[in-house]
Length: 158
Image 1 (cartoon, rainbow, N blue to C red):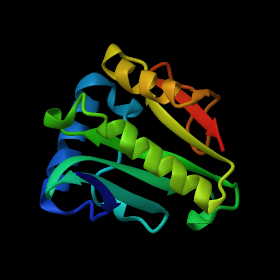
Image 2: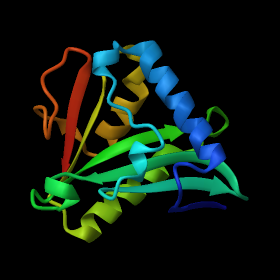
Image 3: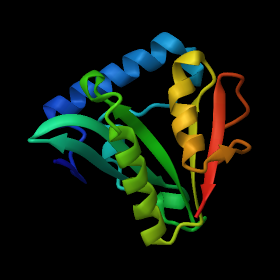
């Protein structure tokens, strides 16, 4: 049974997955277009971090970052961050489970929308399809993002 729980981004297996994620981001996008967070940035008070595990084995992770001053939900919105599944978990619905869990948490907290940034390269096509399948649509840059030919911005009104 797959469980999604709050977790520590510095936990060794999670740290390794996040390091792999960052390496892939830098391999597929110019450095100035990489917006992925490392394990230490994911420990910020404005971020809630979850992992999906089966029998203790890490399958994937995802996070929700509150947008606004000092992590306050003054804008009524949050950002989806650090969605990643392990190579062994791909195709098992783990990303869908994580996405649905995080969106449900955002609704529970009363946010008006969840936004995200992902890449334009073919490497990111599965992620864009996943988000679109769950109702995310393209939107203008949000928060501190600016127009970038390597970025796609998406939102889901809640």
